[in-house]
Length: 334
Ligand SMILES: NC(=O)c1ccc[n+]([C@@H]2O[C@H](COP(=O)([O-])OP(=O)(O)OC[C@H]3O[C@@H](n4cnc5c(N)ncnc54)[C@H](O)[C@@H]3O)[C@@H](O)[C@H]2O)c1
Image (cartoon, rainbow, N blue to C red; front, side, top):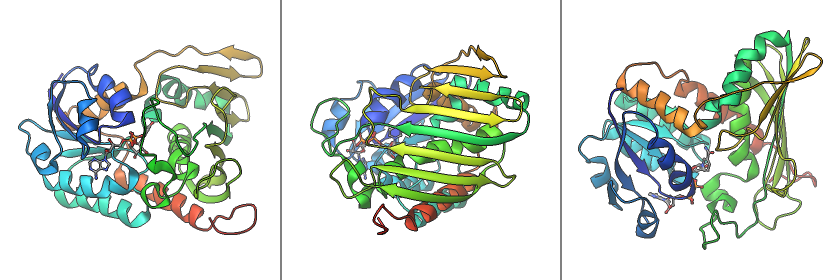
């Protein structure tokens, strides 16, 4: 396995609890540097790699081949532009940015520099979703993809009980609320699973339970270029103890249902109905580990990266346009 030197920019929740533990399981991946503007965040990371609050010093780390960007959405652009300018490959967290202009700038920066840019849609790599994709030909003509991806996110949300800067409920830094945070996963997955992307999309937003200025729930309906209907229910207003994560691919000969697979770990179940239900086993590493292995292989030149950034940008544009024209229940734009 070729060696790939990784740096992590943004050392908060997802980097500390999911990305770095996953990177450590990838053969050939070597974590060489950490960057965060907050020294406190760096101090909570595992010791070992060089850690700095200085972005330029981070990017000048010897042996740095790829950077995983996990800063808040509105900061993606600044970090990706700098990393691309330094000539390193970038795996950028979803959504690509908080708005369309920044997402376009992110993709343009990578194109200009000639570096590989991927979006960290980890759920593409969940072993149940990889298996589900293999089952799709057995479903007949696929007619619909239905996604429920919800959680509980109050204004004072924190991943670990420690005081946390909850940028997710700040419209400027997040670019929206539950919809821009959670819907990108389902939008991406629908296209990955059925082999054609959503080409039309409409959204209804909700602010019903939480007390912040962004949506705490949304319904999105879309249609792929070939006519598959896609619906997504995403929310920050569903208690985590209730059923809240479900993915269905519906066809004329069968339906595949994945429960509790959407998330950062490799858990959940997969059932194929044709029409009797059959549990479908799946095995593999966690979605983050598989994602880093795949991106690392692309950086090392041993395998292609299958998801062009231009395709991810088109989905981001579609989502932001749908959210920009969406209304809440009073008919007011959110
Ligand atoms: N794929 C997934 O399942 C998943 C899960 C969670 C978060 N995310 C994405 O990851 C990103 C980070 O989310 P999080 O929950 O880890 O956030 P977080 O607030 O826990 O961590 C963000 C970190 O970035 C640092 N930071 C902020 N601005 C910075 C800047 N300009 N330069 C350097 N460091 C900066 C903060 O100090 C903080 O430590 C977001 O884009 C989010 O959408 C993805």
